[in-house]
Image (cartoon, rainbow, N blue to C red):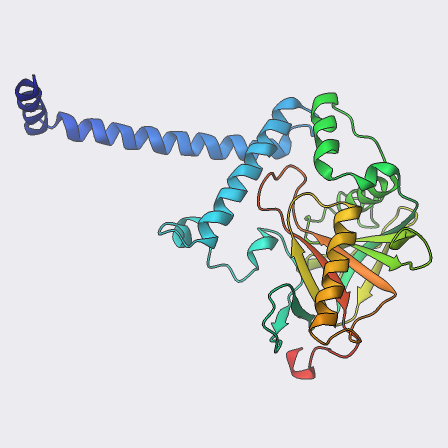
Amino acid sequence: LILVLSVLYTAAVNNGVIAEWKKLQRVKMKLILVLSVLFLVSADARPRGSWLGKITRSFQGLMSAGKEMACKYQLPFSTKLLSCDSSEPRFCGDYDCPNFYEKKLNVSSKDYTLRCYPKPYKWVSTTFNGRGSEESETYMPRLLKYITAGTRRRTKQTEAFWRLFRYIQGENEKKMKINMTVPVTMRMELDDTSDSFCKENATMSFFIPFKHQIDAPAPTEENVNLEEVEPFCAYVKVYGGWSSKWKVERNYKALVAALKRDGFGDDFRTDVIYSAGYDDPMKMFNRHNEVWLVSKNQSPKGNDL
């Protein structure tokens, strides 16, 4: 049997059958790749509530996670095919995010970094008061409710997000659509007088894309405003998964403990904390979240501007 198969295979090779078959397989793979790209791109045009749109965005999240892993471990094909040599931090993905650099610290710990934003940047912001009990959950239970029920319970925080989202969708003086950016930040005032580590009021912000930093249109919706954030440095701790209030608190406390251990206990503001999220809610893996504590003594140098 093996001899017969060997003879048949040799005859097929000599007659060019194998080469044609391999060529056909390559054409099929290219066609599948093109159709997959068209399928993923068309997801943006589908209603967000449709089941097909939700499944496709979940698949986009998986594709994004695969790209991150390939770039992280520098697989042979990653640099050319996946644009891993981009100057943007990997966790910013394909979105605009404010430029920064990291200062070297004379510590052995890798629990945090000292990050500096050397330029003033415009952000669009909104403030809200009060958080429902749902905000203490991680995002995953709420996501599952959203996918299965097709609706999402509105909390003060989600209402704040949609106010900012409406701004970039055209609710501004120029009726201009503006690209989404990262991170989405939350500015919270610390509170040591109650059981909660922060006060009930908070400010959510979207970064204004680079091309609109000069001519960003004014918001038309109440309680939405443009603000310019001056250059600053902050101690940054990264954590994964879906963020939540208790995760922010846990990582904030871990960052404070690490800074005190390394002799920086007097070098951060104790009145305010920032959290930053970089991922679409539908992204399943390799999620990137941060907690920032603004430094009191460290600042970007003049020549960094």
